[in-house]
Image 1 (cartoon, rainbow, N blue to C red):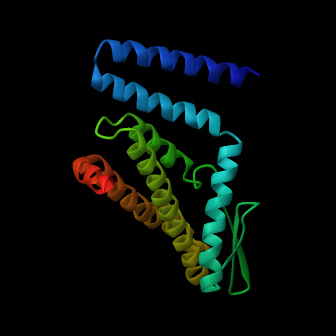
Image 2: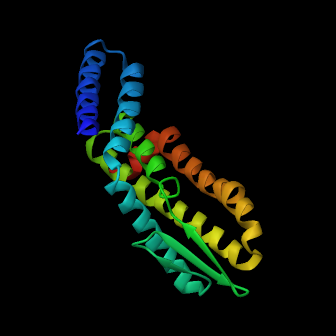
Length: 192
């Protein structure tokens, strides 16, 4: 009950703050307050069902790679990636941090208030961003599972915390670069 009250109160304060900043014509503060506020609200609303959904969908996507390669299996309803190699079983859990929900909601918060885009283009870019981040996450988690298959549990930290993150964030930076620095080009592409 308390968390629902906090969420509703946060939304009311956020909407009021947006209206004040819009009337004051402070575009930069409107963008910042709107983006950060929407991100926080989406994160608050995503628990527990959004996190479960994102984790399930990502695990399912990784499972496709596992089936194609035959190197690992997944149990998407349990958010588990199972790697069996050299008579050892490794269980990888796709949790809140690995689901991609934080990165996706951050992107949605930014795109919703980025002044270069309007209406339908924001919606299309939000959907495109979701798919891009989803695929980046599937690639990252598949890389981790393949690494554990070939090199064992000792390689997990390197694959997960360093190389996997470099892969994921490089792909995320490409998305951000194109969407947020090439806005006029993206606008022209979406207009055709």
